[in-house]
Image (cartoon, rainbow, N blue to C red; front, side, top):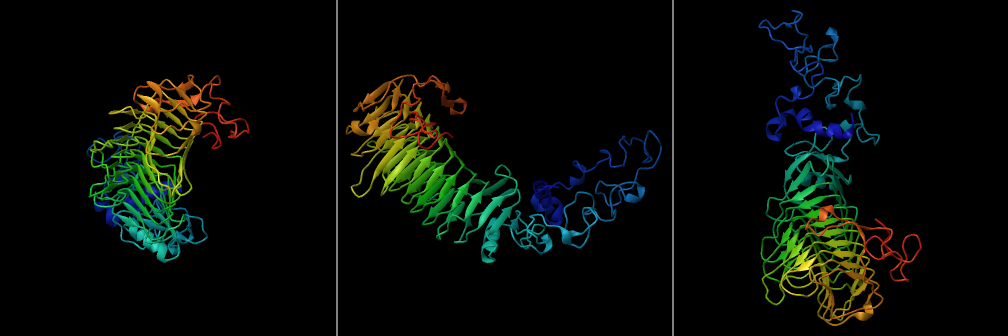
Length: 520
């Protein structure tokens, strides 16, 4: 039996004392575990007579004395111990000295994780299952993820695994470099924060070795990263569904994730339907998907969609040397109650650049909405002590601002000096490219086409105006049916800044699938 299938059986078969609390059916033995028929008689026919005999032959049913759905060996079946319901072919091995799965040897020989240590003696990785009360072994898991993380950390194991189920708790990694993974994937393994505070917290200098992989992280609350809060730490957040988290106290920072003076790796997650103060006060209602202040985080390959905030519906970036690349950022919204600010950056708000440079490269930014500034992306404020933003090789389409004409696609505002190069800025509902201060010298080699108004406040240099010829894109408000790859006849090919090369060494293409970041 595979590792995954074992994990699916653990709660009901390895932990019979937890059946009532774990939501397992008391009739699990009738759910696909009877190989000879649904009547539990040992035949494939229905038992319809009143004498307990087979209606076709009149013979008595075969014996399944322990009710585990397997017939005793002495009657030609495969149950090697018909007096014990935990023993039958395919059963998980318990650490009880018996041959539970009838394979001819006992649990002492089993080594599920193939680390050379028998499972009965192996306390690494540490396993968790909701409500259990064990010691952390595969066959005897602890009951919470917090226990698993703490035990894995304090023992020096640094590996923790979670069986499927919903864990209602708030987890703090406490500085441990623990690699935490689910066994059954995000759809089956949920960490529910109870709507009170952050679901997961890193605040003790955790390194990249501290990792959270393949969970649903939901129902977080508080004011500081309801989903995941990362302060002065650099963990790895990979392959998770981070959804339904709401900042709900005082200031509202980072619905999905809040990164403060942190340089984590945020890789291949779906960050959706989180909220950081949508429609509330402009000062502090930031980053529906992610709120980033300081540090040098690496944010790649994420689906950042349908998040809401006062500013930065998808991402809010300030004082950060973040690299934001290969993300799909769509359907996010930024609206607040400040009549002078009104919502900045539906997709991305670069509030102030990093100490060196905030780098937004090779992303799709589509179908986002802002109340006032930058439906797709805005660079909003400068600071003489900090750098600027470089916006390179993105595809920025179908975005809008609802209350002004200040950049449905992209917006430069308040003395910022960003570089916009090699971007497709097309079909936005309003001004495609707006500049308050005029940034012609740094707005170059973009394709600007099909917006309600293409330019306001700038013209730029070496830009082109032509249909980008997307493979399959429609302005229907549904980003899920869009394909922003371009046809071979697209004018974007080899039309970018000649100083930037594609992965094949040729002059860069314009848009998210060309340039120095290469194709996805």
